[in-house]
Length: 106
Image 1 (cartoon, rainbow, N blue to C red):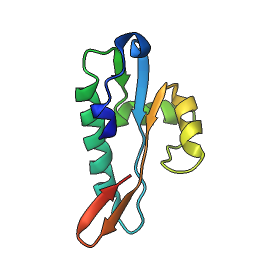
Image 2: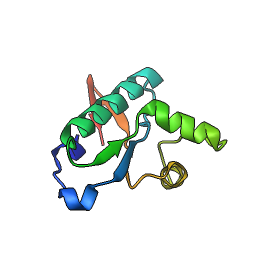
Image 3: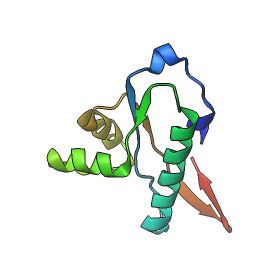
Image 4: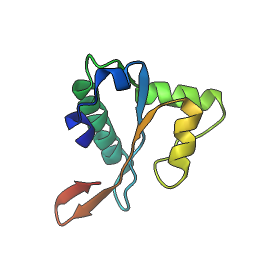
């Protein structure tokens, strides 16, 4: 949730678009990863409220990618390609690992 703590100047972010891509994680169920991405998305929306940054919802991203015949990804160089395909200025992505009984998000 680093993004929700950052407070960029309004003049630098006004009219910008941000996407929280899907998270990756070995041996972790997809629905758990979706919960992490949705939680980060909500934190970003709260943290950037009133700063002129549009945070794309999962649904909006999927519609845009489907219209282009593309698929979303959450790891490697395809993150940059996904960001370009959906026309965003900022991207948040990460991975989730399970250590003992704790989830660690990076």
